[in-house]
Length: 168
Image (cartoon, rainbow, N blue to C red; front, side, top):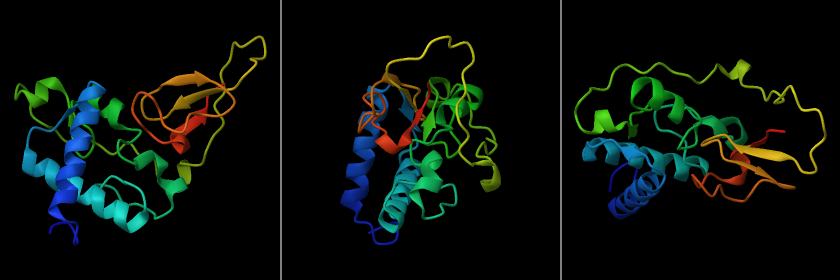
C-alpha cells in the first residue's frame, strides 16, 4: 500500500489508464516512472479524500466547483507545456523533455489567487447574429460544440461535463 492506504494495484491501473489517455490525446507522461507513480498515488488519494482527481501539487478546497481548474488534467496543462515543456507538477511533458534533450525548469503557478477565480462571463465581440444553439468549450482541451448542453464527457480529453463553459 502507498499513498495513504491506496492499494498498489489501484495506482498501477490508474497510471496505465492515464498513460493510454495521454498517448491517445497526443500527450506524453514524464518518463520517470517512480515520479509518475507518486503523482498518480497523490491523485488517487485526492480522489478518495474529495471525490475528484485534484492535482496533488496544489491545495484543493474539497469543493469540486471551486477546484474544477485543478482536476487532472488541469486547465493550465497546455499553457505550461507550450511555455515550459512540462505542466506545473511535471506529470505531462513535451517530447524534448521526454527524450532528455531538455530539463524541467521551474514552472511558476498559473492558478490565480482564490479571490480572482470568480467565474467571469465569456464575451466575444464581433458576433452580429444570434446563434441557434449555445457553444460550449472544454476548459481543458478547447474542444468546441454547439448544442443545448455540453456533452457528459469531452470526446477529445475525456473531461467531465462540469469542465465545460458556455463560449458563445
